[in-house]
Amino acid sequence: MSEIDVLMSVYNCESYILETLQSIQGQSIQDIRIIIVDDGSTDQTAKIIQKEAENDPRIFYFYQKNAGIVSALTTGLQYCSAPFIARHDGDDISHPLRFEKELTYVKENEDCVAVSCYIDLIDEKGHAIPRAPYTYPLDTTDPYSFPAVEPYISQPFLMLRADSLHAIGGYRYLRSSEDTDLYWRLRAVGRLHVLPEVLGTYRIHGNSTTSGSKKNMRQSAVWSQLAAISEQRRLNNYADISFTHDFMTTLSEAENWRDILDRAGQQLTENEKKWLQTACAAKFLELCKMRATSASKEDLIFIRTALADNPAISEGAIMEMTRLWNSGQRREAILMAIALKQPKLAARATIRNLKKSLTS
Image (cartoon, rainbow, N blue to C red; front, side):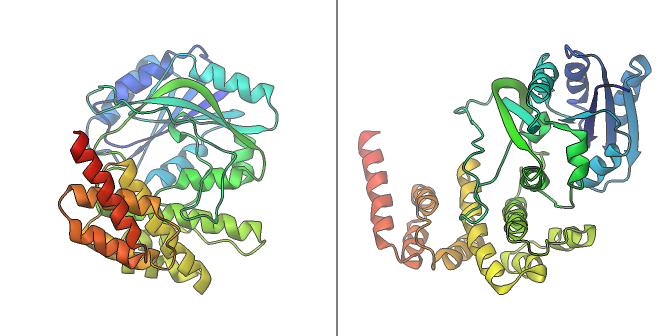
């Protein structure tokens, strides 16, 4: 039995999988098995992996019809037997000492059940994406804030104790934020930690799970906040949300906000539905800021309605109004401020832009 099982879910990553595998094969710790579940790839991913497996007996390849990352990871877990599991995606790169440093930390800190690291970002061509360092604060989590302050560490570079993962029931069926949902639950059995050192390179491209359309952003917002409601329930000893495959499928088919919230609310109380609406609006604004994009007209209407009763959420609104103002949508910016009952926000956004234009 190996000390570490590397659990990988891959899908149509022929352009990156060889470089990814080589980064795993080149780790300073060689006592590993590489469990790869191909989630229905239609390109050359399978052939590349199988060719590598011919020369490396540590690689175990399994194929399944496309069913999503949670299904693939659950399948892969059935073949894992090592005491430690290292997650990896098919398009990212681990630095040579990643496994060694993460394993050392977990072994030396018995209260720690999961560890990750700082990361660099690259685009689909391998070019570095400059950004300010992200430090993954874990001491300020709050499932009740708008949006929820989540316990987040980088999942593609995660290492965790296998027994802890099994103790909480593994991954659950969320279309996105399955990692955040995992971390909320892992905190009940131990501590999470992030090594303050860059040990991996994360690739951002159009095929990434969290990239792409406004629909994906809406889905990301609602799933992350449902995970927070789940944590709220556990804290109060209430019956948890049932994250079944059918619930995931039904909610994932929704595109507009009304449909999304109607389907998400099937298992929620009236108070939870109200909280979810406000939290999703705040989370969507946060995602717009992170991805440097603007909300659509439909999203703006939803945000104005959802945040009208919670004007305390102003910074995200100011950021969105600034984007609207810069793109010439000044009427929408002012309408948002009025809906939030914060006309001063419109003035502040105007002043910011005037100062920017005068100094540019």
